[in-house]
Length: 353
Image (cartoon, rainbow, N blue to C red):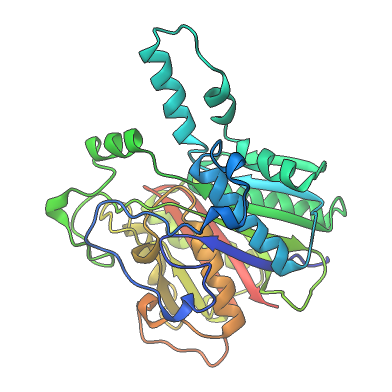
C-alpha cells in the first residue's frame, strides 16, 4: 500500500506559531480562563475589503492555508477538507442577535450565509479557484481526524494526489459566557491550573487554525508519514488501555515501538483520567502534553499535530511539553491521543518520513 505524507504544516494559535523560531519560545498559560490566538496582520494576506466581511475563523484559516500551500510548493490542491467543531460561530451569533433585535423582520442574509460551517472551505476554494472536492467535517474534537482520514483514503484510492486539510475554531463572546455558566470553562477561583494534577473541573479555552498539505509523494518539505487513524465516539475509562492495545496490534506494533506519546491533558480532572490511564502504558516513551500551550477547544488536536510534525522533523521535544524524563536517541513513531470532555476519542500514529 502506498503511503500518505504530511508535506507542510502551518498553524495560528495562542503561541506565535507563524514565527520560524516558535519552537524555542513556547510559553505556558495557566492563569486565565480564556486565551486568544496571536493573529497575523491580515492586510498582508487578504484585501481589506474582503477581510471586513470575514469572521475570525475564516481569516485565520485563509492565512494558515496560504502558509501551508506555500511551504508545500503547491498553488492549487486537488481537494480541500476542513474540520471544525463550532464553525463560523461569530456570524451565527450576529445573525441570531439580528433576529431578536429586529423582531424577525428586515433581516440581511449576509450573516446567515456566512455562518454555515462550510464557509471556511468555501472561502479558501474561492480564493484559490479550486473546483475540486470540497468538504467540511463537524465532529467536535475528532473533526480534524475525520478530515485526515478522508484525505488519506482519497490519496490511497488515487482520487487525489495533494489535499489541503485543515482544522479551525474561534471564540465568541456569547458562547464563552455560556461555557462559563455550565462550568466548561474553569472558575476563576480554580486558577492557576495544574494541568497534570488538576483536582477541579473545567478547562482554559483557546482557539486556532491548523492546515496541512497531504500528498502521495514524499518531498523536500515532508514532515511525517500518516500510518493510521482510529476514532471512537464513546469509551469507558477502563477500556482505554484496550483501545490502545488493539490499535497498536492492528499496526503490528507494541508500546515499545512508540517513541513519543502526545496526550491532551486539559486540566479537567474528570476527563483527564483517560490520559492518565493511557500514560501508564508507555512508561518507556517520551510523554508530552500541549493544552497548557494551546488551550482546550474542539480542534485543539490541530495544534498537537502541528507540534508532532516539528518534533519528527527536528528530532527534538520542547522541555515545556515534557511530562517525564525519557529522551529517545531517535524519534520515529509518535502517537497522538485526544478527546473533548471524555467524548470523541482519537488516535493518530505519525511516523518519521
